[in-house]
Image (cartoon, rainbow, N blue to C red; front, side, top):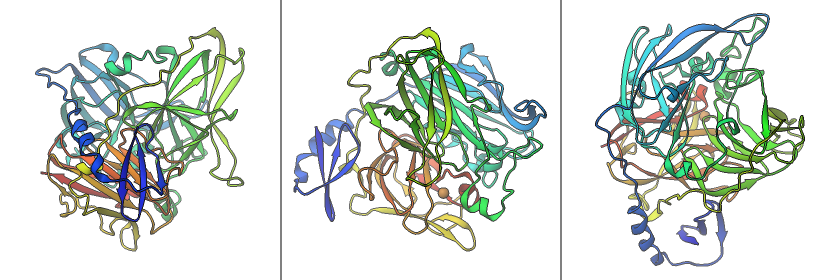
Length: 496
Ligand SMILES: [Cu+2]
């Protein structure tokens, strides 16, 4: 079933099953769909509050060395976590590299996290994609100094999905992430569990990060000066889950890949080495309604993809590689991100159901500013470098346009038609849905499902639908190219 939407200057179809937009010649009346909007608003899921803490965790950021290379150790900053109270398996280390721990929690659980800042800079932790109160969100004004402690206490209300956490001090984020401060936050729920997706040894976290590594095996930052600040940091070495090993031995069956682009600035155009379709079953905010098959898909910094692949046809020792391929013929060479090599063991074959989950579409008619669009321009300035609307970041303030009434749904348009660089825009708080893209149905960007980060390609405009109905207070929205964010491509918004 499709919901038809009337727009100024053209007509588009917004499909329930696929959030692509196709220009249509047909005239469709708007009167058909307030009924659908009412039904949809009744579907808002409420999670019962927990009177007590389910998981108490100590999370510490500190300096250490890791053995990434056989000849010399590498200095990094790391997160380490310990469960003080609650399920022991809810926190695990991600391996022997620099990537932080992996939290694995259930929707509805209440977490008390005591963050201890033992790095030689101020910092604070942001739970990327989690919808938490403003004072739990790691806003830059909550940074604590070296030796400082921040005590979080929040409930996980998000649906099952791959989220993550990282520092959020203004102006220092890019360096802290480069040094190693990123951790992973997996949320499980009953809807996802009921599907019986490949799990345990058949479910793989793939956090892809590039680093500029010096001859003496250290991570370099902004060694390219102004070029790095304007383009963002691009490395000469690729790491998966903080390690150089980019091969995994897997069973010959269905595999589930949970892919996170944890890079500061690099985009990957994901594709399989044998040209088979990428079978995408989820994005930032969890499962899609049904699988979405494509030849390739762009993954911008902070975006996530949930991908299924069936390796039952591989013989023992045969491999399939997840690659990044050029956007156009002649524009570079493909490179391997991760290679999956078949073991002798036969795994199980997952039969993908026709419906993976229920995604409630936010209706455009719900937006209070349907006839008064808010547009945010992504522009460089002479004095401040990259900005939103030409103004630098103001830690404590928000403009009238950035002030939202609690409970309202708004349409926000991001305009990247001024300067030719991609900008992945991340908005804190509630997840949003992509309403439309000026460039049309397919640009290589992933717009389906619940999103917290949306890729603005050069020359494009994107409209989002976002409900501000869970928490009041001051939040940030920004470019997730970390060097852009640090210079000034960030602003506050306030829900009141
Ligand atoms: Cu940017």
